[in-house]
Length: 173
Image 1: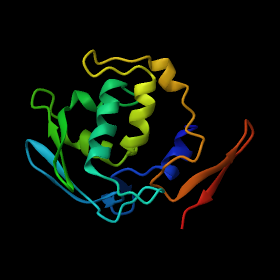
Image 2: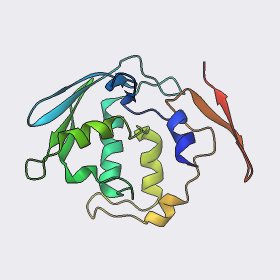
Image 3: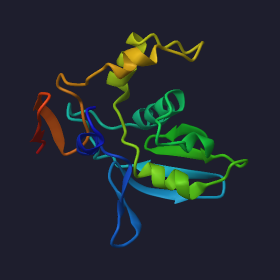
Image 4: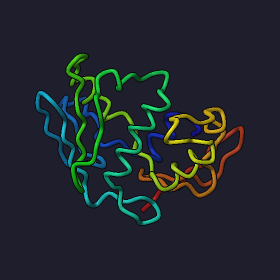
């Protein structure tokens, strides 16, 4: 919500990409290590949501599994992933798909996909009828969620007000 540009400054990804150096730079994570089988990401213990709660490995795992359940039109990262799981706090394992191997695509996605707070979004997903056993929900209900009432964010800005003509963000200090 409401557009990608605003989402990118309200919510952060694990990494960013520095076009001058060609390197991944830390955002919500401090580092990553890539092997032939997986990418292990170390979360930054200083990363906090706007409500003061820490960004956790559960948030990261939940967010990436959201993309598995509701694949975004522009991304197909799950073709290249076997699983995303919590190793421990603060480590997340992105297990690579050996049959469709593309670690650079997955690595790029770590710098593109914003992390969402599980505690808030899980409630929204449940309201849309998500059922773990059946693995489905009413996707249209989920799409109607505006996230416009004091959203919990990780980025440098939060939503102050919006209308059909403008979006006003407030800097988080």
